[in-house]
Length: 123
Length: 249
Ligand code: SF4
Ligand code: SF4
Image (cartoon, rainbow over all chains, first blue to last red; front, top):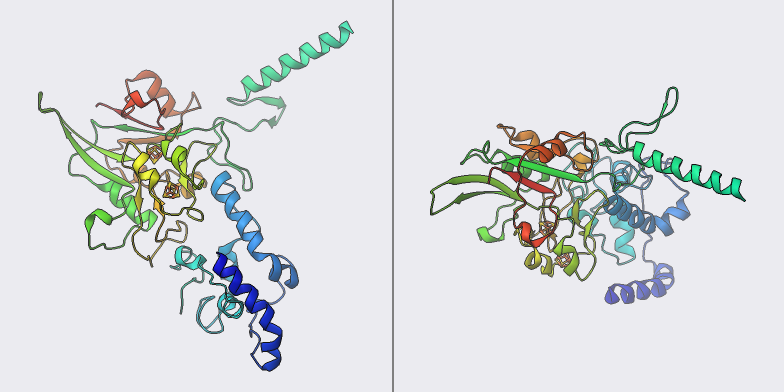
């Protein structure tokens, strides 16, 4: 965790210079524009908090069907061509790679399509 | 002053009456009913699990056929336990069939063994991270987000009910997230129970040897059978008040 934070801090400090020097910013394709559960800036900053609190309430209190849902993130944001949020240009991976944060949700969640439209495994 | 007291008393008795009436259906006004608390098998979305319910299972060993493992197979299918391990001891095991034989009398029993969903779970007591937890309705779970895989809980469990995932997994059921490095055990199919369904093993048993229900509801089939017939808690001497009872051993 500490290593992650240091890495993240380094990226955040370096990001403007790198960007100025030509490191391309993440290029995200919004597959379903305009229908997210909150405005883009809020989602960018707080999606992890939303998911964290939802996961705790779901697991510990048994509250189902909350607004923020990992399954719904995937259903909406998975690439229409690859069916995944990972891989080059993938909705989750593109930003997390830029920020040097490894999203490991998909090690456990959504590796198989089941009754969902999309998956969380690398295409 | 005295009027106050009288009013307070009547209010208190009203509250008491309402609490008693909560078990069953309380008619508040014509056509308006208090939700059946005890029978609250299915909660409204957004409503947390409540301690008005204590989920439990009754297993009739006289019906359970030796050699049958329909429950084990149904569990594996439902929960996506399909990984192949090189060392069999590393395989995940949420439910297993065990055969018992009394060497003196020669009497034999075959029964499914699973997490007993203890009311006072030793796994929760020893967990250093708080990952092992008990829901308000008695279902004992592992929060895999914070489990560090130390396996204290596996040592503390008297029923050998937990296992550790030793390798990366790839084919998990989306409703049952599982992953490497976490301890897991029977969840009573919590994702099904929350939708008002029965655990997969109960549904699959061809002999109808397993019965699932709310132990707190005196009208439920399981509570009535436990009240009428002699049932056993395995290692009852440990006083863990188990959610799983056996009949016939
Ligand atoms: S049977 Fe074992 S794993 Fe299940 S609640 Fe009891 S101590 Fe915990
Ligand atoms: S293995 Fe996980 S659930 Fe078990 S005691 Fe350790 S942290 Fe808790």
